[in-house]
Amino acid sequence: MPGLEPAAQSAKAWAKMSEPDLPVCVAALYRFAVIPDCAAIRAPLADLCRAEGIKGTLLLAREGINGTIAGSDGAIARVIAAIGEILLDLGGFAELEVKYSRAAALPFHRMKVRIKREIVTMGQPHIDPLAGTGHYVAPHDWNALIADPGTIVIDTRNDYEVAIGTFAGAIDPQTRSFRDFPAWFRAGRARLLGEGASPKVAMFCTGGIRCEKSTAFLKAEGVDEVYHLQGGILKYLETVPAQDSLWQGECFVFDARVAVGQGLAPGTHLLCHACRRPMKPADQASPLFEEGVSCPACHAERTDEQRAGYRERHRQETIAAARGETHIGAMLPDHAAYQMADTASAPVLYSFRRCPYAMRARLALLVSGQACEIREVKLSAKPAELLAASAKATVPVLVLTDGRVIDESLDVMRWALARHDPERWLDGDDDALIAANDGPFKHALDRTKYPDRHGSDPAVHREAGLSFLETLEARLAVQPNLCGPRMALADAAILPFVRQFAAIDSAWFAAQALPAVQAWLARHLALPLFDAAMVRLKPWQYGDAPVTFAA
Image (tube, rainbow, N blue to C red; front, side, top):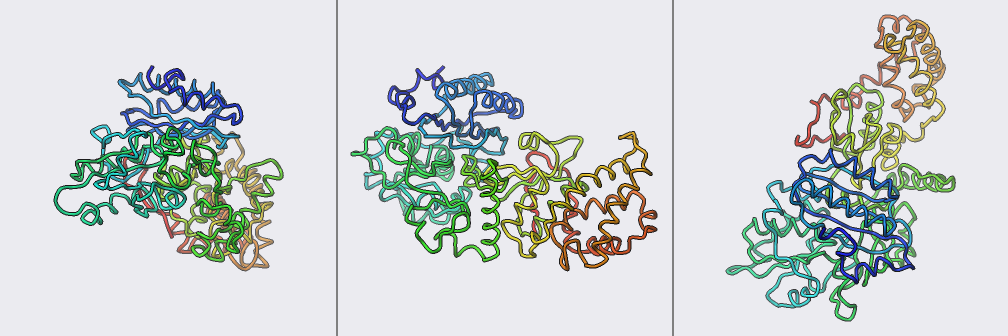
């Protein structure tokens, strides 16, 4: 099958895959094609990749597939072939665009197959690359095209990518996201193209996928002579000899390698784990650099409070690493950063209004000032996107803009507050008290509220729940909140469960000798913060306009 088996690759590309000094094969792939039911192929693809020991990310949308995966040579060859077979069965799937490179170690930390609205988001739903794109230009013909004085060369990537390398003379749109590209072009069209006959426009990106959409967009805007570099910068660096190359610098890639150079050799740049921008090695000598906290590029963009949050997150990551664990807040350099750059402008929160776990996650997101797109879930009909994001399929699930998924409510809270904690909620992160709430008290709550479901005696379990409330009473009798004078993480984490317990029988709760708990509960439920967290939304469905959840 064309484009799928190793034999169908160029001899040079396959020989490069077999180099013994770099044992890991990295395959960047994409293809625009109609995939009517992404959910039907997501699980088989995920299962195959995991069975083969593959790590990375694959994005599926109705418009096609995009991703980067890494593993052994044989495993990658089998997965690439299988992807083609699966998609060919859908009818007339074109040859995959695949670019291979090498790495000394796996540059990804897990395998993810995500369902998205678009495999690369431009925010222009009427643009269809299958209906027509610019003219493909092979890497060996690219130099002649961009050397032509009648050609305008545009780098379609984001500002932090362009900063470490580009083609000489290329225009930098200075966009923060691919979504910004259409507005940039429309605002500067007259300046770019001038009057009269339009010049030739040549565009390029990392692997070619963004140019599929950007050239289709320009053609829809009435620009006729539009060209783009086939296979992108990666194919150019792989196939054009260094002595003939017009590329200057390195090419940013969305994995642990950070950047690659001529011949796709690993580059010299590092990653700032605060802002995820690439850094030159010399940046580490700057007084503005602090590992995990800031770099010269982002130091002025962050407040002291934000840096304190990053510092605490980095401390937790260091402790987790010493234990051989991965901290949930770690800013892992992953190919899913494609989603940070090109797919999402805010995290996506799958939530259910009355769920106490989701409730406490929303409280922390609001206090932190972290805006997100909220998707209310109907628990009896969970959307495929939630199921694709988390095997647990329980709310809350937070899908970050770099593709990572946080599906534990406390981890959502701590992630948000590690980014920004203006009320110093993390000062009141009482692990033992929260564990007692989430364990014995939640057990008693469920068996009091749903005795038929659990086959339980509600009176017995109500008394067990009361014992926990008396523990809270002892604390609140001597201070306004569970950890001191100010509301903190422990209050927000426990409040929704006490609220639910009290509502089972409000008359019984009011009659208990719990004046401090009753006052604490009433005071917090009356806060505007709680009202904001309890916003009513209709259940989300694919295609709905995004709803922003923010302070």
